[in-house]
Image: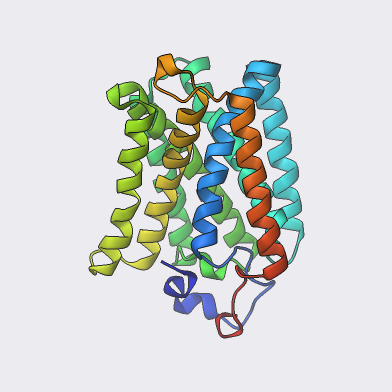
Length: 263
């Protein structure tokens, strides 16, 4: 599924305040998206362990606010600005889900449907106002706000869902297999005509979160918990380096920017 499948008529309105603020949906988009989810999971856990939960949440919230402020300030898509914001959303989205569970004692079986309702509410309001959920026309401030609200909700939902399956008997590796299969279903449904492109995109987008987080957790946690025991810090650094390499490549090659016929 690529960006050209996500075009809608309303995204072609004559009045545009800025260039599209999100990247073209290519294979690089999905690779980096999964990497950010895993990196956000282990980075959040690492910060909470080193700094303590409350300072970690405060630092994560501040970093998120700064990264989003920069993203909103630019007038077009810039690879490192956009993906830095996604990384910070990943870190803080993990913290939001963990605060409900660890800090407030809310079980994942309740937080998962709660975040699902939150996401549905964001989508409902977005569609009611804009009549589209396509990411191809994020050219106005209002659409950009809806977009990032949806992104934050998907990260929180995916975190809770991944932790739910991991603690419900599947374990981390079992969760990786489950979500690896699940992420293929929207594409298959779209190809079969059972799901439109926008719905397929957002469904897959949600699943990337538990997929990446479960994979990173499996790599980081000890053997006693069914993992490889590589540790939070090494996994966080390795996934961060991978993100930097891919984003650096896109910043130079512009392989994820819209073609002239899509502008």
